[in-house]
Each structure stands twice: as C-alpha cells, then as structure tokens.
Image (cartoon, rainbow, N blue to C red; front, side, top):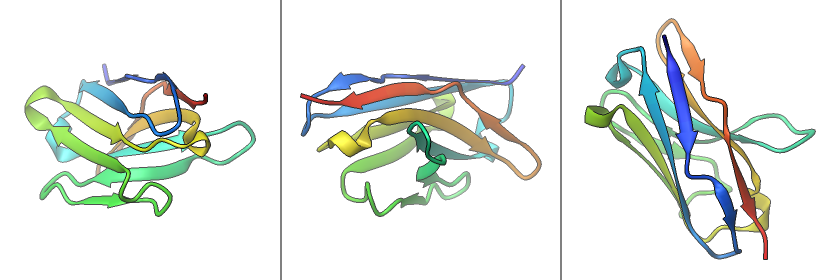
Amino acid sequence: QVQLVESGGGLVQPGGSLRLSCAASGFVFSDYAMRWYRQTPGKERELVAVVASGDGRTNYADSVKGRFTISRANAKNTVYLLMNSLKPEDTAVYFCNALGVRYSYWGQGTQVTVSS
C-alpha cells in the first residue's frame, strides 16, 4: 500500500524556520521525483520545490528561491523541505508528491501557519 505521510508543520513567527518531512512507503522511492506543493483556500495547488530521482537536481518556485531547500534521503525513503525566513504568505497546507513514469502519489498534507 502506497503511503506518503507529511509531518513537521505548525505555527511559526515571521522570519522563523520549519522543516517538513515526508515519509514514503509502498513504492520504489529512489525511482520517483519528489515534489512539495502548497495550497491555500480558494487557490490552485502551487508547485514549491522538486528534487529529481536520478541526479538529485533541485528546482524551486521563484517565491521561495533562496529561502527553501528540498532534499531527499533515499535510504530513509524520506524527502524534506527546510523552510527559512518564513513569511505570512507562506501560510498554506503543504503536500508531498511522488512522480514516477506511470504513477503519481499524494500525501494528506500538513498545515504551515506563519503568524505573529
């Protein structure tokens, strides 16, 4: 059974940091590109960061470039999103996504709230 379980969300003050984790099971993790998305009410899901399956190349949305870092630990079947210098506009539900050649899997999401 495929599972993606996000954790690490919460309430943080502006300028603070959080690290999200996404633990995967039920598929060959190393074969999948891993992505983080976020969504706020009434808006479409936004791609935040990607880490490739092979060479581990990363890519980021312009809105988070220089502040967020995506990484993966294939031995632990886990992908991370380190978020620094958080802003109120980063408030959203963050979702983990695994993208393969044939299949795409989603987690249930974790809430991140940036507020003083």
